Structure formats: C-alpha cells, structure tokens
Length: 404
Ligand SMILES: *Cc1c(COP(=O)(O)O)cnc(C)c1O
Image (tube, rainbow, N blue to C red; front, top):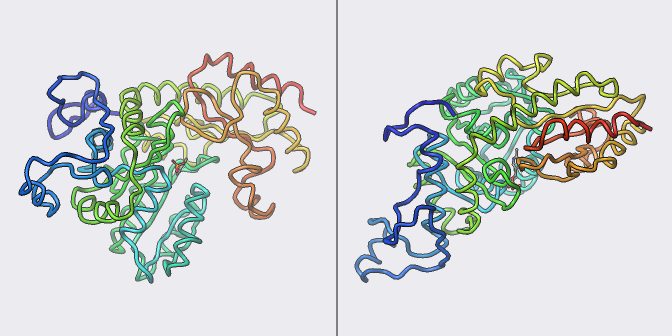
C-alpha cells in the first residue's frame, strides 16, 4: 500500500484497520461479529421501504449482514473501488461476476494460465449456457487483441499467475478492453492491494479469493468482487440476493481482521520469497527459478512497476533432472523430506506451503498439455510464509542435497 490518501482523507494503512460499519451502542473497539439470519424491522413502513430498495437497512441474511458489510467496506477502501461484494469463495466471486454480466452469445477472453477452476468454469461450465470464450497466452498482447470479437463483453486476467508467476500488463489489457466496449476483470489474488491496485491501471472489476492472503492465516474460505457502486448495486446485488453465494458473517469477520495485517504480511513474505528465490538460483540441484522479483524473470521490469517494487510471496522452481520420470522422483523426494514446511494445496498462509503442480492443480492435463503450459514434472511451488529464512532454506536443502 502506498501512502496515498482516499477520498475521506485517511491513508490506506489507517483504513486497513479502521474502515468498517459504525460501532454498535456498546462501543466495541474490535468489530462485532453479528451472527443472525434475520433483522427485526422498526416498522412495517420501514420494512416496505427496505424491501423496495428505497431505504438502507438489513432485512435478511442472504441480502446483507453488518459484519460482511465491514469486510466489504474495508476491502473496497484497500482496492480503491467505490464498492465491494463479498462471496463464499473465490470461485463463487467468479461465478457471480459471470452470472451478472454475461448471457448466451457473449464472449470472454481469458488467459490460458489462469487458476485451473477458473478455466473450467468459464471454458466448460458457462459454455453449456452459450457463453463463448477464448483462452490466450498470458503475456502475448497481440493474441489478446486478435481474440476480441464483436460480442466480447469481458477480458479476464490474473497476474502474477499460478504457479509460473507470469505477469501481464494490466493497463494495456484495460485499454484493449475499453476500445472494444468490454470490461477488464482482474484476479488480484497473488499480489493483493498491498502490492497492486488494478483499479488505478484501468481494471473495472477486481476479483479476490479471500481464502489466500486476505485472511492470510489459512483459516477460512472467502471471496469478493470490487467494482463501481453502480456495478455492485445494479449487476451483482440482484443476482447475489437470488442466488445466495454469500459469505458467512463468521468468515467475513476472520478475513476482516486478516486485512488489518495484510500490508505487513505481504511486505515480509515478499522479502522472504525474494531471499529464497536468490538462494534457489544458487543451488546446483535447481535448474530454474520463477519469481517476478528476479532480474531473470521475463517481465521483471513490468512486475516491479506494477507491483510496488515487490515480487510477491510465491516462488516456483524446477529440480534439475534428465527427463520427466527422474524430475518427478526428484521433486517428490524434496517434498517428502520436508520436516518443517507443509506439503499443502493452498497459498497465502503464514506457514510456508509447497505443492507439486504437475500432479495436483495441473494433474488432469495430458503430458503434452502440461509441457505447453510449462508445468514440468520437476516443478515445485513454494508459497512463502513467515518462518525464519534459515529454517525455510534448511528444510529445502535437506531434499535438494540428497536427490535420488
Ligand atoms: C485460490 C484461487 C482462486 C479460487 O479461490 P477459492 O477461494 O479457492 O474459491 C482463484 N484464483 C486464484 C489465483 C487462486 O489462487
């Protein structure tokens, strides 16, 4: 987060710990957790006005909750958008966005390097309802441009990507979308608003998996869409009210408190990830390291410009091997000799988590598809947490020093 001021005059660091709905009559300093599914109405007239949308006020848990509102206000403040709508997970945020904005015959352009479920949801599930889509190479702007059709309504990108940390130019994609009268949606899960504020680069919708860095401690599932007040009120809210992909108040409260330390965590975890990436580059058993903070990264300059000079907290590396079989055996060895760090399919935790993408997130692809996506059998993803750097290195060195 920069030192920039928002429209109320408070800086981002302040909003990260203070933006919320008003305190209750009890004056609680830590935001209240409202566990209720219904709300007692002050009068029949007021109830009627609330249901007609003429007056603000809570009516039923599917259409709003004060704890969820606090999370939405705080995340909107951090992203610099007018409004935000919370959802039950990152995937339900994408679901809500597509349901709200698309109809049969519309076309979406998205990166082929996006989160696996995102590709399945848009490329397969929405295709059953007549929504067309084209997947393009993440960093090839000409391919994005060539894919745009007259009925293209949405460009959807994620940067940096999982697990190879490919970075695309948000501003260039926003210009491309707007010239085509389309919208740019950006999955800001990896960078978070602490490193990257896509709204300032022209994105229209910022999508989050709150499960990752926003919570930051691997506790709950959550998601969100940040956008203009008009889009949230007129597009997302009506669909959300009727479909129920809502965030539970308890999970909202957990992520709300997580946002208070987002900036500190992202800076500390990015610093540790950078240190680890430099160390991995020096290891004879490592063939290649993928990290936006390294000068060897193909979009290093763009990344530094776009991500507040930091590389994020995810580092991927390839174990040196003579072929796919040896690569897999060696990667499994590194993962199986871990004593401190976790072999765990998640990221954005304070605990460092490692995964083997070729057999998990990208396990359903054919070997040829995996090769095309650059996901080799020797690739290991490290989502760096907050342990002592020496303990992280020691745990990796255990396997890297004894490869079969
Ligand atoms: C995890 C993730 C999602 C999906 O979020 P869930 O909360 O797991 O539904 C989407 N995009 C990215 C980049 C992710 O890492």
